[in-house]
Image (cartoon, rainbow, N blue to C red; front, top):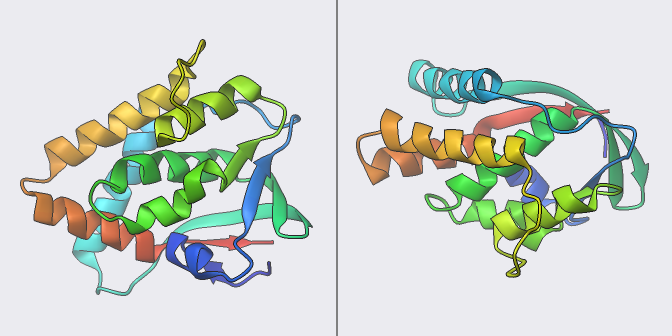
Length: 173
């Protein structure tokens, strides 16, 4: 990994198939409705007002590498919300399934309940999750509502999902 621009598409295409851990010392996922909706509306506005290839910059994510696995030391909130977006947007662009990597792209190292919830939300775990992560569940519901309410057709939803996959950009350091 280096400081080049990445997108979900480029992560999927990376031959090393990078995966990311959220270390124990990172805070719990804390984004609420304001942050999730803010990102979604920013993306929608950006895609509507720029040329087809213009990236939307999510910012810098800092990692410590251990082979093909990276500990996210800064940016875990953004990467987690990107994963929640992938869970919803894969209904409109199947490439998001490749980003999710059957639940292996993002791992909560010491938070087994969060890990179980995420696997269940992705569909990789079929048994009942005892304690769902309310913040993550809320994030997924906000994204679903946004897709339903902000776009009139599935074609528009597919375009948004594709644009997000190809143009949502961030840097790793």
